[in-house]
Amino acid sequence: MHMHDSFIDALRQASPYILGHRGKTCVIYLPSELIADGPRLRATLHDLLLLHHLGLRLILATGLRQQFNQALEKAGIHSEFSAHQRITPLEALPLLAAESGRIASRLQALASCRVNLDAQRTLPPLITQGNWVIAQPRGVLQGVDFQHTGRVRKVQIEALRKAVDIGQIPLLTAVTPSFTGELFNLNALDQACSVASALRADKLIILLPQNELPDLPRQLNARALRNLQHQHWLLPKLSEVTGAVRRIHLLNAQSEGVLLKELFTLDGVGSLIFADQYHEIRQATIDDVGGILALIEPLEQQGILVRRDREKLEAEIANFLVVVRDSRIIGCAALYPLDENSAEVACFAIDPQYRNQGIGGELLSAIEQRACSLNLHQLYLLTTQTQHWFSQHGFEEIAPQDLPAPRQRLYNAQRASRVYRKTICAGANP
Ligand SMILES: CC(C)(COP(=O)(O)OP(=O)(O)OC[C@H]1O[C@@H](n2cnc3c(N)ncnc32)[C@H](O)[C@@H]1OP(=O)(O)O)[C@@H](O)C(=O)NCCC(=O)NCCS
Image (cartoon, rainbow, N blue to C red; front, side, top):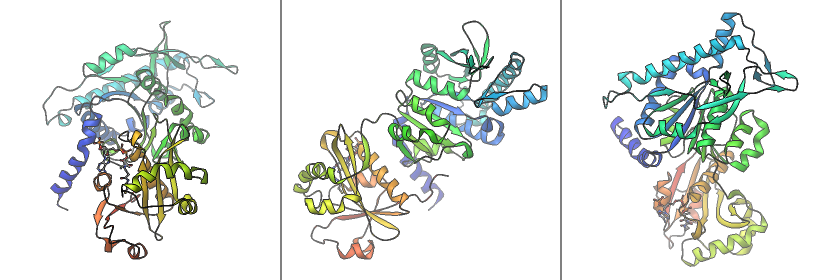
């Protein structure tokens, strides 16, 4: 494909996301490893500014563990840890404040660089620091005094909102004041989580080095996250946030263009935690057959779905996923492996009462995940009335003759369904 064609294609694909994200509040955590990596930081800042110019309301939180460690070492100050938390002595605070200031200045300088703004020749956005978050001491835990290590006491929600309203990008760093006028070392990731919750942000985006990212499915809901909590130190923190933040994205900080790929492509590149689900998608069991029949019978009568009787459904129930809300089946889909590389998606339906809420999209993602976990790379689909929906979800029309041979033999020429194919998990998590 010609370079310009792929650019046009990419821009067109991105356009619904550009509109969808405009005006959305997004708290983004940048790890200290990223801050230490000059070229990667410059590239990330460039992408952050692009998000800002596209109308996302950004709040940044930067880690500075690496920089603080180096400064402590240079000053000969020994820093102890207890339960993976740093104990911050009073004499370390000036170093922490200096590193915080250095990082803020670096980001402000990068944000002011004309190269990043050239297209519009606008003035740079203000990356502002403030006492948005108020700390309190972590205190004495199991006999260990954490000294000037703090935790969040309060978030100045209105002040933060106002700053974002007037186009600023608030920056949260580790040095945080308390109501007693002291300073505390407050973990920036904890601040990002607290601020995202307090603001009921649309998104919390956490960038981490690849080796620190938990091994999660591409998409999961809050309940699935709770079940995995013990697997990684980050997950209990995120679980607490899911009640207030709609989407949490976990991304590899070292991957080029990761923010743009995650936000402006259909499949994204990281792990996405949906926090606003009141339904669950799970494997169907024999007890679900009645619910599935009730859902699909009207669609069979309209000729949208192929007829399946109770016996057939019972025999094939292992192939089905269902969407369940309040113990009611409100969606279903089946995945029938065709050969060692491909499967057919079938019997795909969402209860009319629950359509247009993105549930069909979630169900398709779940089916794709299941196919990926079975090491299948091609999905086929036959449809008579739903072509557009599937092509909007990445399926491409092919000729019936392009179906795998065993399925081709069963193709019903009278029904004359259109045939679609989608390649999946080609580039699994980078
Ligand atoms: C197709 C279907 C599964 C989508 O489920 P859903 O939960 O409503 O899907 P989403 O909320 O993710 O997407 C809704 C979008 O798809 C569009 N859409 C719904 N049905 C469509 C169709 N047949 N063709 C094209 N677009 C369609 C909606 O207009 C809506 O568009 P918008 O986002 O621009 O408002 C659901 O409409 C359904 O069950 N249809 C009947 C069964 C069917 O056709 N199954 C496929 C058999 S092959």
